[in-house]
Amino acid sequence: MNVFHVKKMTAISKDDFSGRRKFLSCFMLLAMCGLIGRAFYLQVLNKQFYIDKGELQQIRVVELPAHRGMIKDRNGNPLAVSTAVETIIIDPMELASKTLTANDDYIIRLHRDKKAKLTDAQKAEAADQYKIKKADNIVAMEKLLQLPKGQMAQLLKDNAKKHFYVLAKNVEPDKAAQIKALGLWGVTTSQQFKRFYPTASVLGHVVGFTDENDVGQAGMEASSEQRLKGTPGKKKVLLDGLRRIIDDIESVQEPIDGQDIDLSIDLRLQYLAYRELQRGVADNHAKAGTMVILDAKTGEILACANQPSFNPNERSELQEKLYRNRAITEVFEPGSTVKPFIVAGALDGHYISLNDIFHTHGIFQVGNDIVRDTHNHGTMDLTDAIKYSSNIAVSQIALRMPPQYQHSIYEQLGFGIKPGSGFDGETRGTLKDYRRWKDFDRAAHAFGYGFNASALQLARAYTALANDGVLHSVTIQKRDETNTDQTERVFSPQTARKVKAMMEQVITKEGTAYEARVEGYTVAGKTGTAKKAGPHGYIENHYFSVFAGMIPAKNPRLIAVVMIDEPSAGEYYGGKVAAPVFARAMAGAMRILAVTPDKQETLSILLTQNHYTRP
Image 1 (cartoon, rainbow, N blue to C red):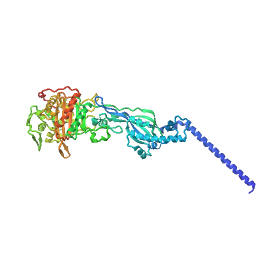
Image 2 (tube, one colour):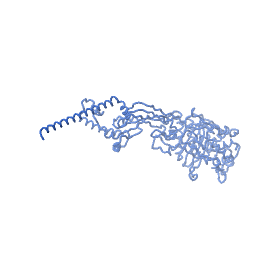
Image 3 (cartoon, helix red, strand yellow):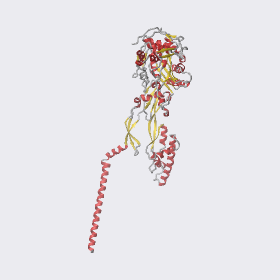
């Protein structure tokens, strides 16, 4: 190869390299121009589109809880209130592994007097101090939340890869503020409302309780959920990269608070009923007990107590068998407390008269069955039949009435029908179709066997005797223009007054409920003692002891029913077990309500006979 040829090849190679370099330079320049143009377009000409997209990713609409309405008694005393509480939320990953940078507040605060740029040594010193401070603050948070020692360290270890963990709920605001003041990264709080019940176990069965989401689960909390809960609001919030709320942007919809509810309950009478029922159950070593007090003039439930009770503020006690309002949801055979209704119905229907005499000699044969009295009282009139609580006398009365008529008396009094008090879970009880009754069924129904009812149903039935034959509706909510009393005439005024006068004799020394007497006041009432039914018939030595009465008898202000379940201290008759509870509670109630005493030296006498034909 000659020298000319070599020089020619070298020149060509240089030209090729120079061309490629120019091409690459131009390409890079064009690419840079394209990038700059694109950046200008995105950041200047079309920035709003991407701002909107970014906001969509960082802005969320969250719910604002509505303040749940209060539950109050008839005098405005709070029975259920909502208090603000905080939920403590942690980011275990951030809390456990957070490292410091020169811009962190902690370092800036640590060196706020130093204008010079922090050195690596200063940063290291600050980081070491933060580790110590963080460890101390984690322990401080553990103590504030009353967690077991070392639980926080174990929790952070077990959840090291999580960004969200609910550490504690229902934390008091002041305690939550102390936790926030610790300044720990990865610790946030969220405000909620917690239900609080000032009366605790005294009204637990009536008021009920809510769950962790503030939704009613029992009692009036559940029955009035729609009125109490209100409507949640909405707001826009700004989230950080870990989806945590870092700022409020705007309110979208204000929450609408729930409505307050005024119950018919009088807290003063409720305390009395609760205390005396508790004493009655304890004194008689009983399994349980129930007491209902009604306003005799309006049918409002003024007190409703059950034993054993429960405290709705203590979640550990919330077992169904404890929180059922047994006065309204459970039944028992009312026993002899229904005898006055049979007498009143028979008088109105002209199946008996005030002058009738009944021959009782301890036993009475009805078909193949036998009706018994506890004592042989021989020949007696209507007043004695009530005063001595004769099963035989009322059986004879019942057998004079057609089955359909006897059934209609119970039905009009509300037996076998839900009372409509406004409380969820009301029982209707059982009242068998009269077409299936045999003669002994007719007799048994006359002294309170063969059907059952709740304490509330029995108390309601007594309004027909207390109010001159007019049966009142019952309610757990205070009466107003939207919650009016629905009444129905069941007995004639004359008959109701006569039977009520007979029931005053029950409270005499010769009657079955002398221990129901209240100093200074006339009392009319009736005892009941019923054997408890089991899966295979009635159980020996297991009784319901009942007393139903009204005070003052001349012009009743209150009606009360007391039921003691399975007394086992020796006595089991209603006059010995339930009547004293009635007497103690009513004595206090008369003082609280400032009812004028009406006791006279002579007992009431029956009004002159004036029959009323039932429609």
